[in-house]
Image (cartoon, rainbow, N blue to C red; front, side, top):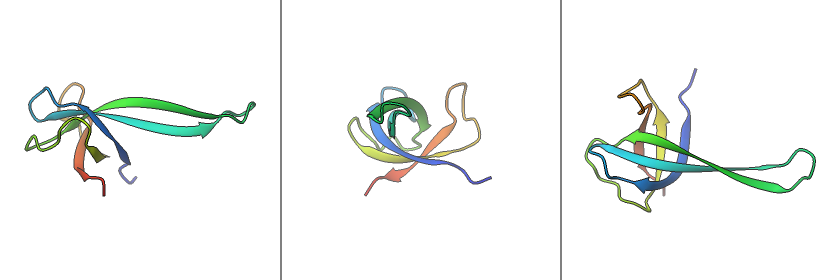
Length: 78
């Protein structure tokens, strides 16, 4: 199975080698047909502490790196 790749905005870089990425998804409500925005936060591994708050990045699924980290940063979104 291929690894998922998501795009989001870095919301925190307080911890060493870790960034918190907020990923937003949009979809239409099944009955009301109104566009709904939902967001979810993911903890991602950032080896060199290169990304700061506000950066748009791409993250990819990986093997567990810690209790909460299951993603790694691929790079900045173009």
